[in-house]
Length: 201
Image 1: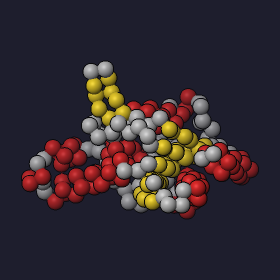
Image 2: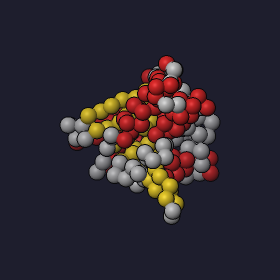
Image 3: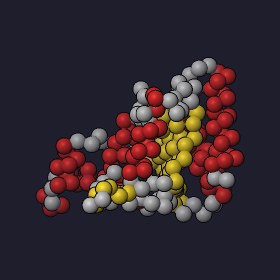
């Protein structure tokens, strides 16, 4: 069993999503102690944003790539392989300005690859990542779960992972974190309870 743990918060030790994503991983490995965990911190070791240079590197024959293009292609392939080889993916995804962190978007652009994680057929797109379990830790200062304001975050992630074939997608929510000390404590406690009692039950 292989678990890929992704964090994207820029807040370091002050991050609620990091705290909860770590708890999710600990909860899973407690029941599956032979799990191999691979960790990627997208804030501290950021991927470059998807660009024309990214496409140019991929489209240049290997023997013609310069050093920067070679590094770009190798990094992209390693990132994709980490995802493809994982059975479980745990993603810390805080909401920034009604959407996901740009660092997480850069990672998504590396794993959403035609012919690798999805393909187009005569009857429409087909996801190629069936059988994976993905857990999203969604944290936010405001209250957005199930609201129209979730369209660029929760809804986006549901569409994205559904598109590439993930049917076992679960969320851990801790919202309203900026509403004061008591609401924050309650939200974090509820999220922790969900992780311990429900998520892998």
